Image (cartoon, rainbow, N blue to C red; front, side, top):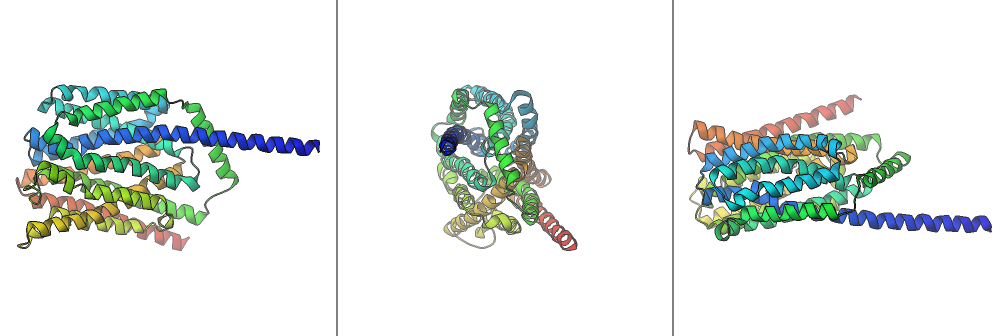
Length: 430
């Protein structure tokens, strides 16, 4: 009887500990999802919506916007690769606080005096710093989750940032028209709030390490994936990371060109960003579906379809029917809406796969988060870069720039197809 009493007491104590650990885990995640949401309010204004600001308020043309996008992409890639060394030196929590304080301080100058010089320098600095922010947040959210919960957690993570991005990009035109200073004042406020939330949150790095170790031990005691599943995940990671830069090739080239696309020129700046934000809303919905389903976990070749959808939808948005026929503006805009739906689904699939498979195979590593963000930065450079080169060779020829960007995406699709075929051949031989 005494032993039974001890066993009951021990079971109750373990249950209470597990419940307390679960509550602590939920509180910890809430802080990071809040910080993620705040950061996702600031970034879209300064890395996507900013092209409408520079075009409408500073008088920049297509080439200047493309050059800015290239510069942001180059420094973003470098910043992403520095996230892991920064964490190793200062710890994730301290590094995140410092990064958000730095972003708030950087945007203070153009909020007061938005000249060409200050805007350019600050945007480059901002892109460099925020690139360090995302790998740390991705790791913080992913490192303590088992593989069974990781897909849903990453799905929620993707929903939070993409939902905020949609909202801010849709209203960018309104901000540019009625409160241009808000393009810098809003990021200043949200990053300052992020730093305060991180500072007040009780989330020592030692607790994260202990929790991650428990998850790792559980996974070791109960293997969650057979060899074939690991192979599928590895292939999916390769395909998604080949496709990820091409996704941002299309995205950043497109947002750089948007203010000067003939199909939206007749609209007000507020209507332009509202119309051209549909793909962001669809991408957000795709993240929800992918976060709560697992069918795509074992079908890596869906990424080839996503890359093809990316190519077709990019061309349909950039070159609507009026470029080839006497189609009306209504037909053009209907085509653009449909193409944005396809674009959002393709981007959701590629991004979700890259982040999920990278994190599940690396157990939430900041280093792998850095690779993920660096590939995004590579796309930032290649897309606007291809368009800029064609503008330099053929000034004013928008279609040439569009074809150049489409060529880069086509090359990525061919590369992904080749990698898939080679992987399949190796599997058959083994």
